[in-house]
Length: 514
Image: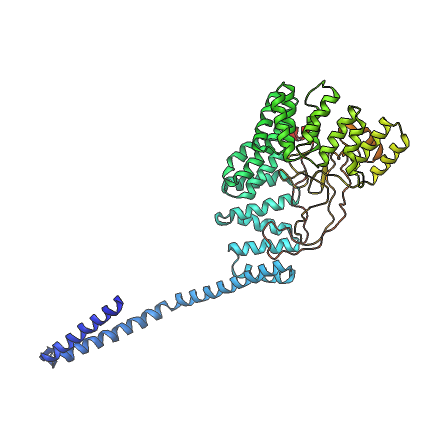
């Protein structure tokens, strides 16, 4: 609206000026070098305006001719940039689709049109990964790492390539450099944290977690700190009992349902005579997650206690989780120790229709002790061989006889879950199915519980404590082709990007595995 008003005012001023000159005619005489020119004032004004217009057109034409080389160069550059952009787009699409020939063709075109562009380097690295040329991919990532705008991306690619060739030292160096360059990079902080955990450097891992506290939400930070504190407590349990108790208590405060922390804290408190506090911690975790370790901690809370008194305490704890099989097994075990055979049978009766291995072994023990019936005991022991699988500490397909803070397969913190193996597993997307390597040697589950170890060994002699539990490692997942390949996408020759488990030379890690 304001522009319209200004336009009308300008038109009015011009019309007023023309009318003013028309109403007041006059003559203009120019004499120069014997030449006399006579004209009116209005005509002279029109001639001056026309001359100015012609002069501006001539100047504009001269400038256009003078600037034509620059304009032409800019046009060609824009055209080249457009072609390079189209080649990069088509190349990334080809990489995502797994079209190796098209990826190579577009990569060559991009290198010819825009060899130094960040996206050109990315496409080069992606195409090299797709074709399996690891050296070319690493060269492209190094070129990106040398530039400020692509340094983080280049370091990420170099980190992935180092993990692919099992170069843990280089992978950790790249992750630490990336974390120093850009502290907000989640992958770098996580990689350094997991690396310190694999090395058993729990103090360093806790310090790094504290530095990265803002990167995690409150719940995740508390959980991971509790896991690392539990690991540190387990590592120093034999050398410094007071420090171990302090770490375990802090871990329990952060995550009251973390079974290993509660069991360790309760055991250490009981050793110091703080029975009420120990019972409260174990009972709180037992209510949240009934677990055999907590049942054992309940049973061993008071040393030298009479078997019948222990049975009463276990029964009181079982009432807090009614209908749970762990409660029934704990009461049955305590009843056997107290020679309360009828009580043991009544607790196990609801689970005899489809008994688990521990139920079968307890029934075998019951038949042997109560009735001295070796035949029935052997029958129950034989049934344990084909009994349904029971929950175990499992992470990434690896089964351990005890909780570990970090997965030996993937290096993830707090990866172990108490569940039946091979259920609820999540397979990561891959380009091509490959045989899954068996997990590194490690301890196997003893599902029979601490009181039935001898019977369990007689049932399954092939399961030694130095070998992992049998896992269907030969299964191959269906091929899944991701739509987008990130720099850490392994490509068609993918192997697990996770580092191998830490060697047993690491003090803290060896302490926990032992």
